[in-house]
Each structure stands twice: as C-alpha cells, then as structure tokens.
Figure 1 (tube, rainbow, N blue to C red):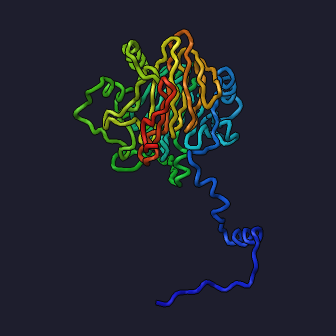
Figure 2: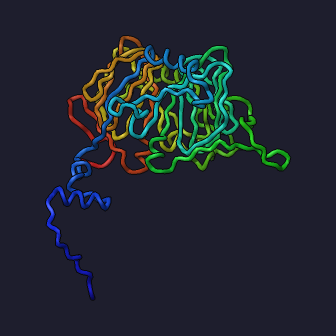
Figure 3: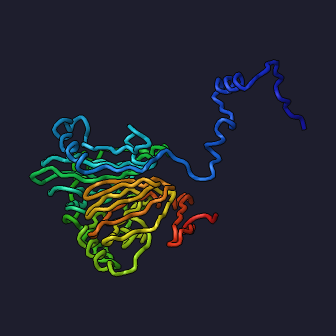
Length: 377
C-alpha cells in the first residue's frame, strides 16, 4: 500500500524559527504547554477571598442611585476572585455577587441556560417568581432558578433589598452553551401574547408549602420542570431549616462541617440544581473543624455569628453577611467564635460529580489524609 512521504524541506530550523513557523499556521508545540497539561494535581489561579458586608453594602445601595436600571437591567456587584481581578468571577466556574433592588422596581421575565440560586440578606418585600410560582423572600430564605426556567424579580417593600446570587454562567460560557431569552409569551384565547411579567399559576409560595414537609409530596402535579434541570421546589424557607439545625445540634455532626444539611429536590432526591449544591451548616460555640479539600469550589455567606476560616494557609475572619470563597483543591477549616454561627454555602460539586471529576480529601484528627471521594491515590 502506497504511503505519502513527508514533504521535503530545505529550511533549517532552530527553536525560535520553528516556533514562529508553527505559530504562523496556528499550531503550538506541546513542549511549550506540557507543564500546564501534565500537572500532578489541579492547578488554578483562584485565591481565597473575602468580601465584608460593611464594605460592599454601601456601594451596592449607592449603585441604585448612580446606575439607571435601563442601563444595567439589574444592579449586580460581581465579586472578582483575588487571583482573577476584574473578571467578575468568584471562581473560574462560578459567578457570585450581590444584587440590590430599590422599592417598587421590577424586572422583566427572562430565562437562561445558566442555573442560579440566591439567599436573602437584607430588607423586606423581595420576591422571585419562577415558572409562575411567586416566592416571597425573607432573610436566609433560598430560591432557585433551574436552567431554562422563566423567572423575574421585584421589590414590593418600602426600602431597598439585597440578596446574594450564585450562577454557573462561567461554566456554561466555557462550554459554549449559554443562551438568554426575554421573549416570554402566554397563550390567550388561542393567540400568543408577549408579556413582560408572568401570570401567577398558583398562590404565592406554593412550592414551599407543597414540598415543605420532608418525606411527602403532592400526588397530583408533575415534579419534572425545565427538562429536569432542577428541583420543583423553588423556595426553601430559612425558618424550618434553622429549626432543623437546632434539633440536630447535639449530634456529633461532621468533624469537617459541623452540623450540616443539604437542600435537595423532592422530585429526585438529588441536589436542588444539576450543577450546584446548596448547604446550610451550624458551627457550635468554639467549634473547630478538621481540614478538607475538594476539586469543587465552595462559596460561603455568614448568616449568623462570627468566626475564622483558614483557606490555603490564609486566615479570613467573617461575620454577618460577609462572603468568602474556598477555591477548588485548597485545604480549608473553620474556627468558630463563642456563639453559634450559621453558614450558607453553594458548591459546584454536582457538576463535577456528573463529569466524573469530583475528588475530595479529608484530614483525620491525627493529621493523616483520607481520600473520601473520587479516584484512589
């Protein structure tokens, strides 16, 4: 069988000229990138970071007076990881930031491929409507926007409100699968009518009431929404979650997370979103946790108390409404103060689990390391 011989060359190359010739054809020699692709452990530019409420809150409230809503659609302060300044990304795969809404302001309904969740921080009268389910938000309440769900937000109170958002939009952008739609319409008398806001399908807070009793769910509705992209329960109230933490506080708990609970989908028993996991944890007075690390990143918001977290050797002191981030594959632990603390957190572990890339290590009390999840050493 005939083969094609290599084309003859009369050019003598050295390293520099070979590199230029390759670059001229949009080719890169592997030897130039070998260090980036054959690292023995995950490498990323992310650093531990903290954003103090006392610093960012005044700026958030000021943004509603300086930036017109027509210019921004919404006033989000996008937290940039210290290792990636100016990117608006709290990690390479996650967006995290606060949104402030002045009284009387409403957004138009929209949807996107990215999944989102938010926790309420300050103010009264805030709501998010998801797939026709209007969810009123008080401090500590969590609402999800599964991928592809129509949603809108507003403030019906007398003062400004603030919540903290997490989205996986950097992940969808990396995959080249990010879509955004604002062409919402409803069918009325057989005709498609474009609307700025959804018509409510059920009474307010329906999903929180329908699924709020653990272990049971309505038998007369579908629990499958938006191609199964997330939980049919959009609203998770803080009060019952906080009560559960209190009921469990005398348990031994996790040596790495204290008393920790995970929000889950009553439709599948899995995480509330296919790509994001949401947790709430209680650290008891003077509790110290053991170190752990994961290929997944984790973003924390302090809802109650004060303490210190040590992340990759960096000490970060936090208190009410402060936000801090644990990058992927960096050791972290918590040291609580002399009162109970409650931390809300969001992780992209479900996305990595689905891809087979979730790896977790934990320290024992004797300092030894155990691979608690993922491929063995």
